[in-house]
Image (cartoon, rainbow, N blue to C red; front, side, top):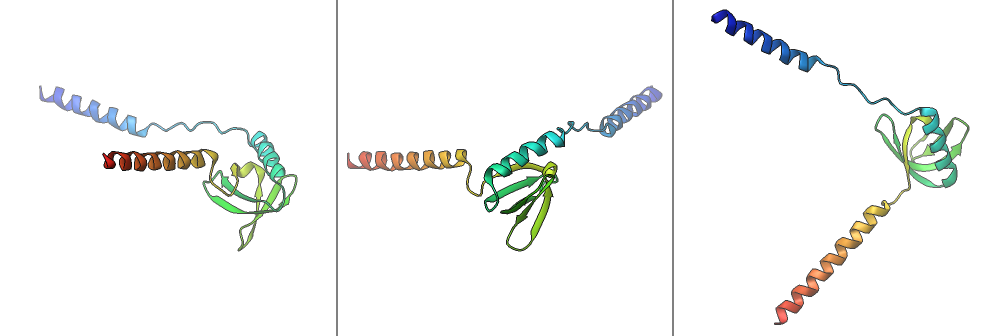
Length: 126
């Protein structure tokens, strides 16, 4: 009976260790060439001299002004230094301001707040 309990605990331990040791499969990255071409088009559309917010594949965010657009790379001046970046290293390009959705939600929030104040004021008169 004791050997059955030991065997059960050993099997439970091995199962638990195997679950922990399983490698997590990373999603396959999209081809950088295709992504790089899209990023290049987005930056060319904005143009040299425009302010952008760039998110890189390694998670870094860079904000600055586009100073140069080449075939494989572009340069951004953040006011302290000029950084040269390959198009394939970029995940996302945004403008300097808030996203359209954020602006919309701020407007909705202001509208709801004003409505609540007006309703409260009208109920207070009664």
